[in-house]
Image 1: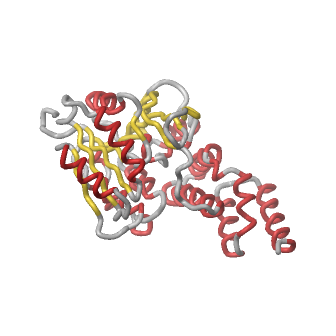
Image 2: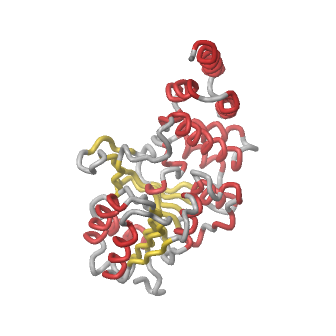
Image 3: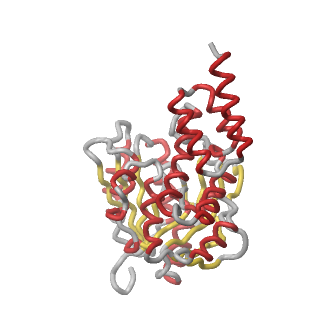
Length: 328
């Protein structure tokens, strides 16, 4: 426990029908939260009214460990609102919103508590992760957020933010991947999230970036502290739905926070365009085939806003025309 009797880290896990993943996560948390860490770490679950074995599993985990808190919604309130609700339960100096299908890397909890002791005044501590296969056995790829060594960025400064975005090696620098950073609990409030974004698939972007108007200091820790489970996204089986979610996320983020600065707008958009597969040209063109005219023009408008090349937009229209004429 810290001198002021406040926990250092709240590990908050929004979950829904993932009992099979939670078994792995609970095992790792039990291994990493040793006796010396129990007083400075708490684990909080916000169950979005799961209908599998989640309730029984987490009730038992909470009963056996005093550092665990389990909350259950009476009905499914959607991912965005459950994210905000889960974050509101945190009492630690820093909060880690951990995906229910992700796993802390070896000794990650200990490393994070150590870094909090040194950098407790930062707003966000961003770190790297390794993508594993669906069974969390084989490593597929390391994702490095930024080029260079560990360092601090003051993102309220436009020039420093631009430098930060230009050095991006992956889209996690936008804080789109919720498990790849921790944030100072007192620096953020769901009251700053507009109602229209509270059930947005990327609610967390608006929760975090809203702080920039006052202060947003980010410390990039060039360490791999997380394992990501691949092949487990549950947005949709429809390619258009996936493409639209990601394009909507970056478009809404840029419109909300960078609409008066075209340079920052383009830099932030380029990060997502360069590193998010769903924002890639091949995926977008493939998604055109099975959508109606309203969806197509909405998609084309997002692509135009995000400054995709004019020739690519022309190809979209050609594809749409071809499918409209020749598809059965």
